[in-house]
Image (cartoon, rainbow, N blue to C red; front, top):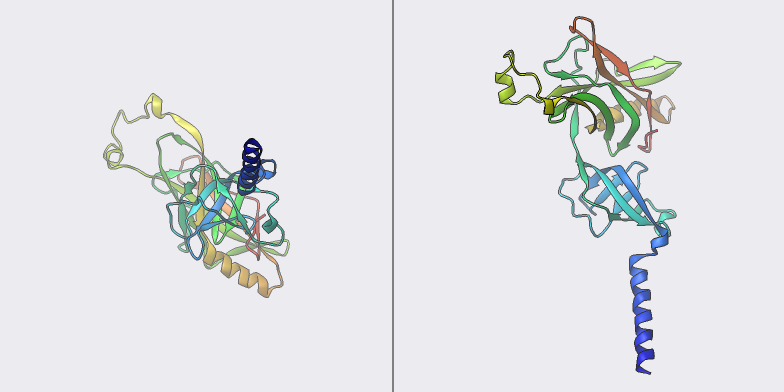
Length: 264
């Protein structure tokens, strides 16, 4: 009798544990998603589809508006997936911080090569616009230990160009190598070529840019003209001319951001 009672208690405990953990058969894992952190009123992350993710294990070191790449899992049978913009998740590993750069209304001089400029070979079609932050993935060739800073600007006098009756808003991306004091002092000296360990490699870098004010200006103008989205193109310095006195510029396909803030 006692054995039966113990067995019954064990079954009940297992059922309760299963209920708490969720059915592993309905658990879905999502890898490396762009996200913007929120601190108040509830800690969590906004992701590309506009959904807000929250959970009990969101021990994140950061401020509201900071940008991250996150991996997480969720229960696909959760009722809140129907008709709700929030979702309970479990983070997998630590969120990866993504640098957030400001937008400069002082338009870059596209005819000049900047000091320590780093060329951008291409931009992935992958992007995300979340809560005023534009995430971009760029390809570069540089040393493994190299650190870069990034700048994004626009022309306040000519924010857009017209193509086939549609306005395309232009942003200009440049990368600058961060130079240490030792490197500054060795400029022009012989024997400063990269060592074997420092030979150049191709790298893929993720950055986020605060374009909220720019987007809001463009959105207001497009709304006045009966449109439902803002089309943005990223211009980037991709090569030098023959005598390296000027940059040659490439441009991405348009990134379309609907008025609900979701990019395509």
